[in-house]
View (cartoon, rainbow, N blue to C red):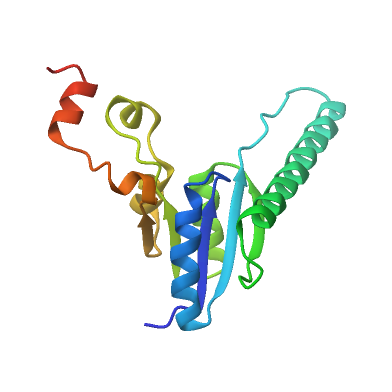
Length: 165
């Protein structure tokens, strides 16, 4: 297997550093390009006149600029100087934009960290990682962050969370 391009996703949380660590390890073995993707949730559009269309465009541009600044700051604070990343910011639904970027750039694998949500919160909120795995045509490596590795979900946890006990 030759891994030339790796897409690492981030929500700018400490959890995503586990995905970064795994991807850089794999990438160093293959000399891969490492794309580091942050998706800014789309700004809701206002309806009405053309003036509102320019307001929508301005709001999107501001949100994207802010996303770029936040990603640059995250990289500066958390990534060592020896790691070469290609930072990418997209606007829209995280699941859709991750899939779209991966397919457009012909990446070989997507690396995404889980948040470890369980029980009712997982059922109600869902998981970007889970939906990327489910709908991606490209292999996806999910990584459980270190603090969560010791909290393996047990049947008792589910029963307690759903108030079955």
